[in-house]
Length: 208
Image (cartoon, rainbow, N blue to C red; front, side, top):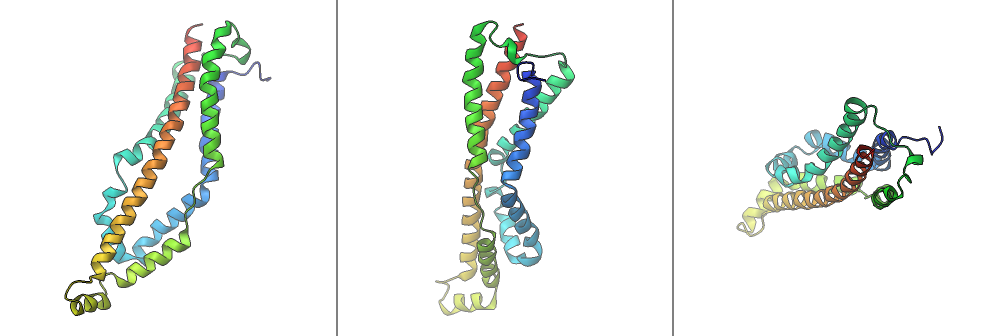
């Protein structure tokens, strides 16, 4: 099969799946380290786990999770449409210049999609697992400890290490939630570009 005879609708199926796999591969270390931290929380930092449970809404909420849901939804809808509802749908690369104006919306939507996806593949955030573990170990040592209670009593409550741990956990989860939310909204931009391109090729096919 040559490029000219490629069916753009099926190519888009492959593109969505390939970008999902490549994105996971590029961020595998981040996901792996995050997973290990989450698994270790219950056994290694039980006191912190109690405090995290009280502030979990700062991290897990619908605005944060919504873009990830949209990613999977677009992929599933595209697969169902191209392989279940309209399996006969096809628009070849060689057919794009006929008529010529079809190239305009195609290029205008393809360019931004490729640019945004390339950016997400090249730019990958970092997660310092070692530093996070040290911070959690330190906080676990002070949370609810005798030393923390002694300091609170000796300072007549002016210095409360236990409360400071609570405040730091809440602040950390809030900042992490904001960072995750920011990242997810960038994913929304990515999804918007893909959706626009997908609608464009389906629209061009419907006109035939």
